[in-house]
Length: 200
Image (cartoon, rainbow, N blue to C red; front, side):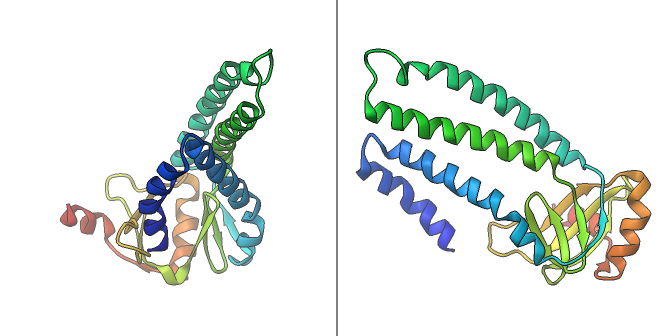
């Protein structure tokens, strides 16, 4: 709920700030993303000992390609902003604004690259994926797609009304049986594929 309230109030606050509102938004995002990435080792410790590290999923591969695209975009934006750092018309405000904007685009590229390189891990206290961990207590059940046997479906207790109830992950075929065996130790298996189809 606090995140939603902040999201609603942020545009109003930026409107009052004026021309540097977008720069402030860039700076807040870049700082938040960097802190989130740097804090991952500490947050990961809460998930307990590693039981199984799963190969890269389809989702992580897509994120890696998006990250490479973001790197290209960040390079292009960096080159287009060079006039803010060199030449006779350079101002302190222009340098700060340019540096903050570039920090935003490069932190975004780094975030996508790191997310793309991350792997799904089954740990003692929950699942780790994409720089976040989900405790077993927050997962209601797991199941497999009827048409794609190596597609894992997780049903979670939503944190807010905006949270996703189902998470779908592609598991490498050679690890599917081992993943199934480990998840059975912690979760209830259910026909979530049929449940999702009925919900639609």
